[in-house]
Image 1: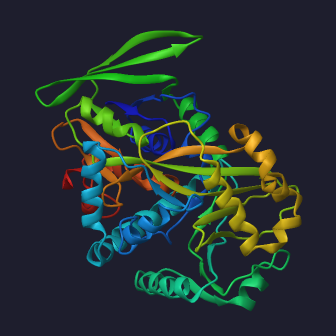
Image 2: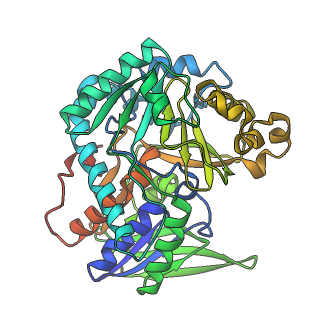
Length: 435
């Protein structure tokens, strides 16, 4: 049996891993050169704490207020486009308490399974990517955000997650070298982190060593079907400035794992995925001495911080709209200004000072600031499973900012479905045919 996987990010490579493990011949088509994308620039979180879908009560009203602030973490670029309006209407309908309650359990199961599978990769000895499970601390400075976090903690406890509420002194005791200026925090102890750049490099190398074919700079341009099955996938490959056309025929299975580029590719196969790209930014600096001990999220600012052994990454924002290469400096500035408000000690830290020099950053923003697009489904749940109108097409996309967190489990579930086996967890909530 042979499979074509469209997309060589962490979802596509994880799917290739488990299909290959099941005995499939695998070809991966990746539109980039394998050195960038959300799978590289993300925060490296494995986050069972993120069991609540992106579509939830309050996000619309909060988002509207944020749209009028240049430095806010959320922005929707208005446009008279049918796909944006359709996605928006479906998203609004999903922003209710009932949807969150129904989604929390399947999301938590998917996230926990993925964390355990990813840990097994590291512990198996074939890859090493700075995996550690020290949890993630959600810090808050105001009573309003404390109340919201208590609601999340209540749901987490009902799902069996290990969560400890912390007061100001306890937060500072966990970070003795960089005490946070906060009201308190919620310590989600099931969360883990890793260095995604290393995972991507090593996973791709392992797959190729085992016989998978990964074709970079390969952009899918056409999909042909016959009697409800994909028969041909045509792609253009750019090599040394020359574009050539290639064709793959008679696949037993095609898996669409192209992230934010999945919707137009699905359309080539006669499928519709309500999905929009959400741009996010991150900045990484080398830090020989790392004072911060735990990954954390600054709730009021919606900023995430990841401290690896010798580097620090700061990330945030969600810009929804058409893809472009623009970097909005005020939003980057908003991310950086939030950090010392929570961690005053970072003001004088050499690792952070490099980024906090806003004038220098503005001049060199293209080289210092990374951005990528998260694939946002219309209800905040990923699309995992068989397509609606195409027998040999499976979807593995729409994971928003949780692609890394859900990658290993998504790959395993796709392989189990392709083999016709019972799945490790219930998957009905992620069925692409729900729209």
